[in-house]
Image (cartoon, rainbow, N blue to C red; front, side, top):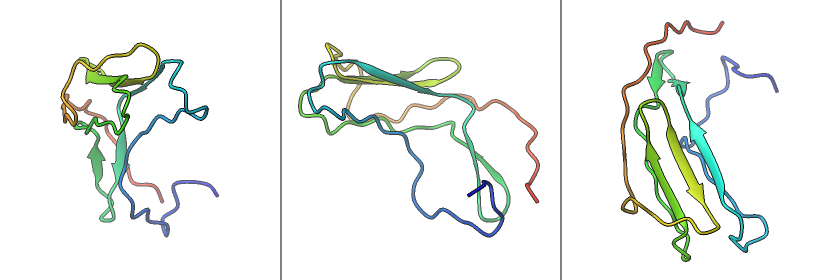
Length: 102
């Protein structure tokens, strides 16, 4: 299916997760999000300028944070948390001119 489609509305929450398919947490994995936006049902755009970072990892080998430009998330290996679980940091959204899709 091609996206975005005017008649399709995703009703779930927005988020990013990291999964360790082997279940060993041996290797560290890292992800970043930058300039994220989603379109609301009314056609307006919402900036992902706030992200909730949390973990259900019992090994406590996870971390995350925010820089001037992006959110980052890391888990596995010898990673140790530098933030509380959960944490909800924010950054200033980039001002983009976004138009509605037809």
